[in-house]
Image (cartoon, rainbow, N blue to C red; front, side, top):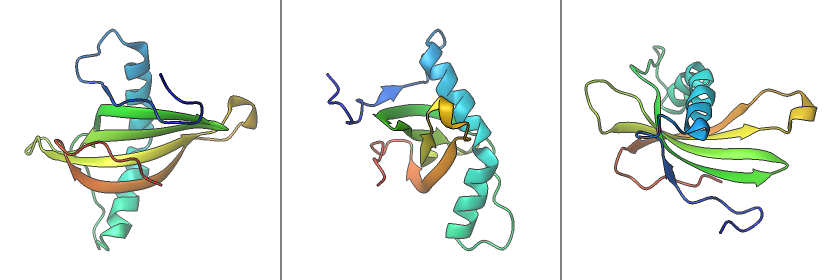
Length: 118
């Protein structure tokens, strides 16, 4: 049971082809790819633009607040299946007419526990 305002348990996406929530999460994540590349590039002070080979969500947690916060583990490399990032997305309530925003990103490994970023 999820405590009101608390985080859900981590949910795997990889084998969830028929799971509508998983499909929606992947769609949301894909819309954030260029922002994630730019944000991580700035964090790492890279001169060249960072470019992820893939951007596939594999696990997520959700927190319902005045909107929805998603913590998502995303695979980012075709060559190294271990290379991942953890991202924090905030989706405002629909009546606010505001876009989803990428709030945080950090490098990770596929086998790392999904981080809850504050």
